[in-house]
Amino acid sequence: MTSPHKSRRILTEIVVEQRVAAPPQVVYQYLTESQLWARWQGADADLDPRRGGIFALNMPNGMLARGEFTELIPARRVAFTWGWVDRPGIPPGSTTVTIDLAPEGDGTLLTLTHSELPPEETEPHTVGWIGHLANLALTVSDPS
Image 1: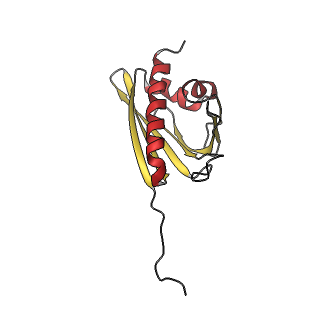
Image 2: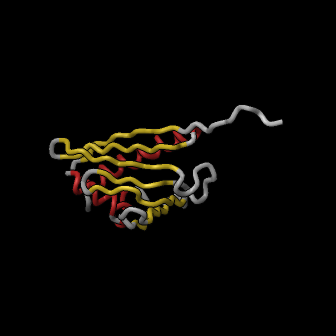
Image 3: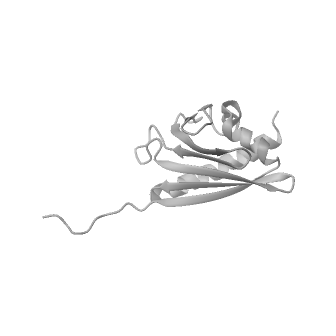
């Protein structure tokens, strides 16, 4: 006998803000150019910044993130799907990351929203994004 009740997997969303001491057009480059992205988050990045283009990131710890770009508005927004090749709870392309850039004085307020996360992944992804975005801010302010 089947139950009349259907189960639903409840997914969560995290939001992380980071101020960056550079204008949005500069920050946007660090979100769309493979070599610049790799400088702040990965060991290697392969980005094709167009709608449907590949988003591939090899992390320094050996983990592989994969997805595709879903939205690009120069100096304003970058969105892509996200997931892990080697982590069954979040397969490639199963979650969405949206990064909004807003001018703030002579810098940028970056707001990252990572949605469709399983609840057990909320804390590790929040901690990860906080650390990586802080690294982005440092990298952009000292590009040498």
